[in-house]
Length: 329
View 1 (cartoon, one colour):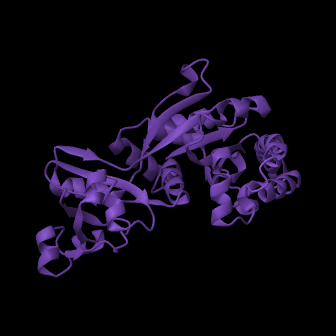
View 2: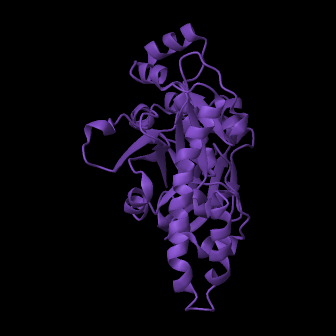
View 3: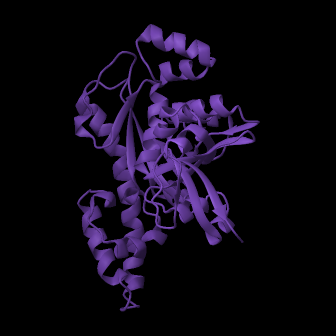
């Protein structure tokens, strides 16, 4: 799982990447792709660490990729390298825009490049696919071409599950889920109604916040009347956008958050730890985080209240579950 950060020059793309991952991609010369890891902030995880005081604490993480590419050749050059990217954060420069029309124009400038890049790929493959008339792509690709020529991203096109699987090897940019980040001026408020799945951030302020110690961060946020840094919300929203969540394993050795797909069964969730856990799955001992807190922040307390339960192979893991797996391999 990876998320690509895209933006026009001077949009704040690399600044956002540095805020979230701690890596200054501008110091890495000549690279079109720079990868980094962002920790997912979560008060539940912090509470569990405080309770168990483990030797090791491992929060949930998201890999981000800072992408420097424009134009057909630029996007083609990185397309294959980013075939595993699951989503896009598209950052838009609002701080120097005169009005909302200019903001929309800047958003469309990059979005149109992505759409055009996908259209080139479709056109290259339509003729080749006609030589294999039994392929489902014979019907799908012309539909994609028509949709892209209308200037619309493929994520807005109704596709069946089978059609989505059939075209996944093309790694279309405009098919990937997109989170729009509006990089605003300090204190500015923008109406984001024009955009779907958008959030606002002032990268200048957020960079200052990210550079502070935790105690200093709180004091600075309080002075601004803010409870949570905006970049925390972006990281959390990006995880939700990709339909991911996480459960916890706890103990004196380690407290760890395991990222899984929403809707995962207990055995599928166990495979995040090790494939053998899925293969030899017997039962999952589960308590929700809310019940853990409600009964004294204690597994023993939750068990006494009947809230620590054994679940089988059909159990759908919930966000924030605290789980211990029983398995035999």
